[in-house]
Length: 565
Image (cartoon, rainbow, N blue to C red; front, side, top):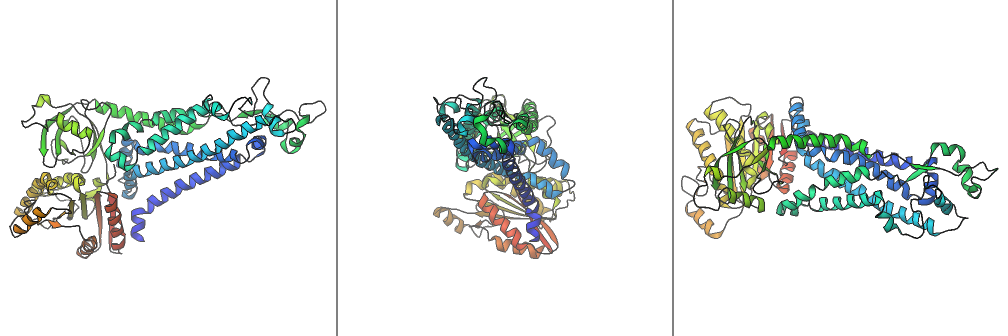
């Protein structure tokens, strides 16, 4: 329980506060439309009125939040500011995309409730116009405002129309349709299978948020939903006058014809601040994108992995950070995130890019990856860089004992960490707070090992030479292999160096027994706080998080961190 609180306590608290605010706003605004001012509106619409207005208030709140988790520069600033005070609080910022998704789901839920309630509202408005009987209060209320059309209650002014026509001929209807279509496209294109296989679809449709917010701000401009004015309540109190509607406005009657007005649009008050912050965010990104970036070296690694080594004036980074890369010759609109694989001590910054989609394939070809001869420097494409941005891996040297777990290309943030270790501990002989690193790399194919093996071989040789083998323990796992490969491995198993990686440490076949690994680390490092860092799939994250909780005791605590961008 103690480790759960350490790992998840603040996250749970934030989520509970967020849910609590949503619940409060829903109940508060639901009750607000049950008061006397809205009595005649409820005569027309019934309970559909508060059911439409309550989720609208929650939508305002969540639309205020939705942009904040994607303001990368703001988050990096906050992370650096609060990290010195609270590492736990800083770690919550690494879950920005998770919170962004939760807020999006909440927006989708309240949008659905809001739409369904308003569909009923328009049917009730239409029914009130169709039942043209002066002995019905609903019809009398619908006829109010026919003279100057200024104080009407029913926005459907005639019985010779239908709700669909009204929906597409009013500001509220048109903006509502635009908002809904934009939201559907944004959410459906954000599904994991589309985002990973068709990133361009995800990228372009996400920019429909501009239409979404414009429609949101103007949605209430026409003030279609109206209540009785405060002045009118003095001359027509519903509890006294609702039964005397046939005498409204006549001489000798104490009940005047009620007047109605809508609430002034208020959504802009909720979203203006975040929209300004996001515009500032984009201005910073544009400024960075115009800073000159020079590609100093291109390396084509096996298994179609492209390494770009670059320089930019004033560029400064920390281990495990990432950047967004744009290549104008491929696309002027697309920016893709890549972890930096260089160390802060190096005079360049680099990224390893696995070729898995149209954009990466086009970049690969632009850099000469499909050619046999090296690409001349002047022919290399121009690139723009936004970043770097912080991740959980920045905290790696704040733990005395560290577990690094990478799956496939997910090893990239740990390349930066291990290079930095090489510079600090081996080349410069600096003392660092971290005393032990356990490195685990899981790969489904042998080719994926090749680009990273050089770094590991260099580390292994240097640590052996300086008698520092106890500092880094690395375990490499091949999770899938072919029969002919297995036969080759068996023949060369007794060789001094591993037949796959060339390292003295032999490759393991299959998947790690995480229970045994955590048990071993617990026994080796009593009274320690162990930082567990993962860059890999959600299934592996779930497994490691459970292990962190189950193996934490009074004297050993495992703190789980996951790369999330």
